[in-house]
Amino acid sequence: MLSGFDKYECSRNIDLHHFISRGKLMSADAARKYCEVTHPEVFMVPVCNLHNAGTKIADSRKARKYILLRLIDTFGADYLKEVIDGVPWKVPSAHFDLTYEGIMAG
Image (tube, rainbow, N blue to C red; front, side, top):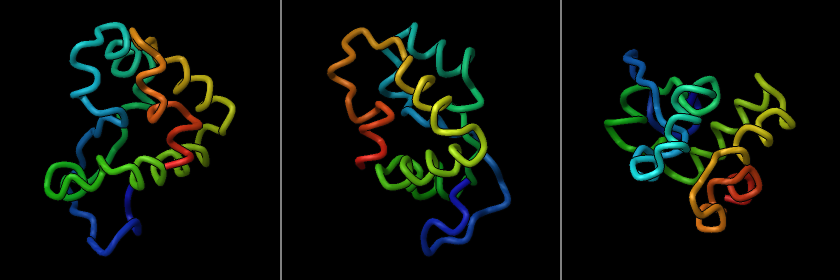
């Protein structure tokens, strides 16, 4: 998913990367279930191990936006906006950076 994003060549090993970090989902059971079970096609993104675990580049704001742009090619902007903005956060205003608009601004 991040091939061509930066100077690093992708490794052959592929991980499922949490598009929204697991740390943010740990204390939000409904949000975690929504991301991991209801919409894994959006929130569980295949990323090479180097970008995911090796360098943690996949966790950056720029990488999140790059991944979103790639997902738009597959699913379309309207669908992604609906799904991303549908995450049932306990306090939605605290997660603007994880809304569709917030990610695109990043």
